[in-house]
Image (cartoon, rainbow, N blue to C red; front, top):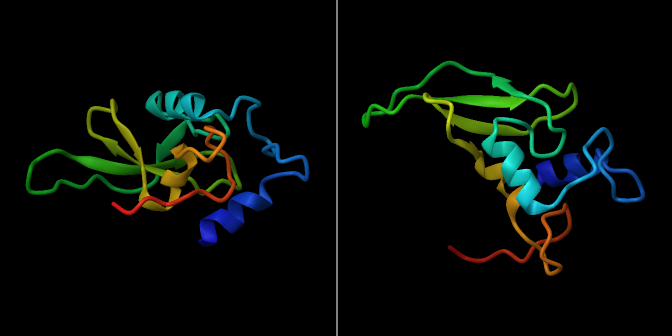
Length: 111
């Protein structure tokens, strides 16, 4: 996965996020995302595309982290109350064997 390679470049040899906040637990990342902030950098996620209106009428747009080197994107509903990571970035909220969501090899579960 290209995104995983890119994200690992953000990390130092000590496996801490460069420019990222200290708390990188899965629950903290989810909380930051639910508040409209980047799960890694804790910076606001700003609109990066136009508004779309599918047939069901619920408008949405794409938002991305305002960190200059971050490419994390999410989908935001028109009411700004629901943020969902795009599929390429959902692994940030998955858990590994230790029960934490960190950029390490995850066991993928077939859906």
